[in-house]
Amino acid sequence: MDDKQGLLGKTKEELVEIILELEQRIKALEDKINGKLKDPPFFVKPNIHHYHHKPGQKDGHEGISRLSPVHIDETIEQTLSLCPDCHNPLGQSVEVIEHIQEDVIPAQAIARKYRRHRYYCPCCKKIITAPYHENEVPQGRLGANVLIQTAILKYYHCLPYAKIAALFKELCGLNVSPGALAQSLQRISKWLRVEQKVILEAIRGSPQVHADETGWRMNGKNHWLWAFVNQRLAYYRVEPSRGRKIVKDTLTEEYNGTLISDFYGVYFRLPYKMQKCLVHLLRELHDTAKRDNSKQYLAFYKQIKRIIDDAIRLKENKPDLIADIYQRRFARIKQRLFLSLGSTGSTNKNICRLAKRFSKFWLDMLTFLEVDNVDWNNNLAERMIRPNVIYRNRSFGNRSVAGAATHASLMSIIQTLRLRKENVFAFLKDAYLTHRQGNLLPLLSES
Image (cartoon, rainbow, N blue to C red; front, side):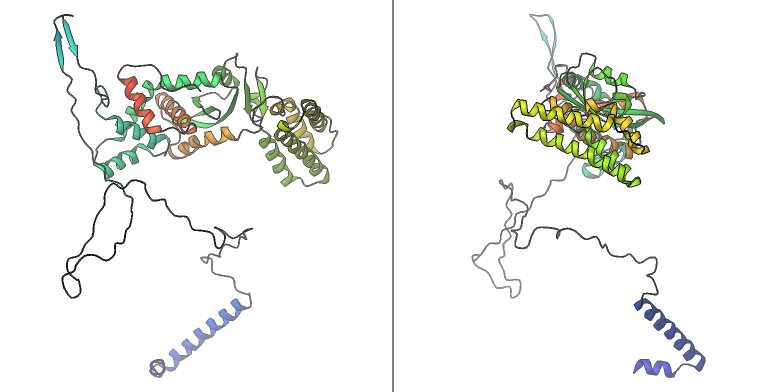
């Protein structure tokens, strides 16, 4: 009724404009229904990706929730003495509803004064000073908890110094400048170099080492971050060179283990037993197949992939095979790989290119079949270099040689502790205080 009264009060020209506008809207809706009009550009279509299975647990699966803590630190009783509706006195409760909730206590910055008393010894005839307290950082204005937490926030959580300073300010009211934190970490890394040397010596004695490198920036100039890792060790260094001399300097000429790497030319003609990453090989073959789908290339791709699959399967079945049978199958796989890469005789340019590239390394592709406990891929090095890539994306590298050395030292120790599943905070604090108070013996074991 209100709409009719509103129309009755309009002029003829206004009614004509309303009718024309309605006709346009009706025409647009009809075109949209018939598929003639597309959605406006701001319309976001729903995700039409079809999953192979329904996300989440299957129907009828028992739900999983957070486990209740074993120890209760505080119990709070909520009681009533009067009814909130009629204000009648209440007696004993007839039921108790329990709810367990975990929380954190807000942090608070504290200032400690350490007073070391000095005494005169009449026997020695000299002044004796009381030792440092176990939590005291000699001549330090910031405590060990602040310094070690800064190292973890910087090199594990990849936060810039400005955000770390803001975090201390907001969480516990501690005022500290980003520059002070940066200088403190440089001093910490110098005291922890003894732990980094333990990691380096352990890497040099490891039966296998994964190596990889990635681009780095130091004060705007190109550098490279190198990673040498295994299942329990991670050693990093930032260098201006990407040459093989870095590998030789790190592992030394006497290294007698197996070096696992990609097909980059730096790792060619090194005096070590080598294992090339077969994942890189398969990835290169797969990427080329996207551009070249000819029958000749696809047959070559399928042949190489079958050889690699057979090699990996042979390694998995080694415990169940007689030594002679294993060696015969290994020799057969080696022969197939040589014939596929060294004697293709193909006119396909991609086959010739890949065969020429990988034929130089064919002897290093099957080392994992000869040496026990050697991986056939370099995935570990790529995973261990990933935290540095995240750090680089947030900080764009380092500004000085001292900053690069700090990064390499602290990142090596933190990632090694993570690989060993040790408490990073507890170890760093214990090691720093121990070395800072004069004991330079390393706490980190090589094994």
